[in-house]
Length: 326
Image (tube, rainbow, N blue to C red; front, side, top):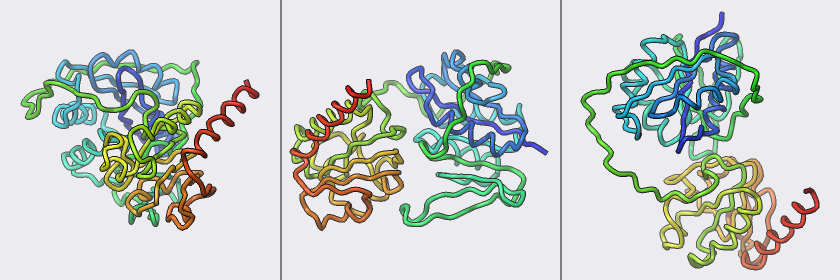
């Protein structure tokens, strides 16, 4: 018998995040022929509903309120709790994003349910949904199942492939009225420090710099390569601490966790804290003058050389390849 699965859709600046579609794909596996219901919470988000249906949702529940224009944990918890009470799902799936990591534990506590976080894979085995998640900073993986009838999980972005988009799909879009009250937090102003372009946490290609870039200026060749490849620029904590770049670019145990198809580490030694944030990348390329650097132990390909010579050469070669394939 199939399950009803509720998926929390996420939008940023009027655009749905890819992890929303990945969550729908995960929900489809969990539903086992049941219903996948997506929900969008915010202000002015109803126009995004059709895209969720095209990516596999059967229905969409939209919650709009002027107090939900900017994320607050208590406001979104009230809204999502109302959706859960209305829909009575047997499973909830959300992205393991900044929003999902903050909201999901609060909702799980309110519902008195267990939560499996940071899921990188899932499968049906022996009548159970088996979740795979990293432990010990990504050095090992564990498999988990839920021992009660309710499933609640967050999935790591860029790990579960979304379903094929089908523009012919149709489904009900319903607006749900909620009463948001007693907010303990009110956002007066949002100051954005994130870089423009590809979202680092969802990028398929990441070009990351460490202390070896030597200065803020040293990140320019990395940005040029990222622009050519359609990727995003990241950094080690060492580069951020040295004020070569903003902390919004930090990748590692105390920064963002990324799992791109291609990760190019430039001038990064490979401290264990950094490896915790990128070691699950599908292909890792390391560029470093020190052939003994720890980063080469996890790299699929290594280039021993000066990044300021190697990166521009790579950029020019990729430009040629793009021209030839155009």
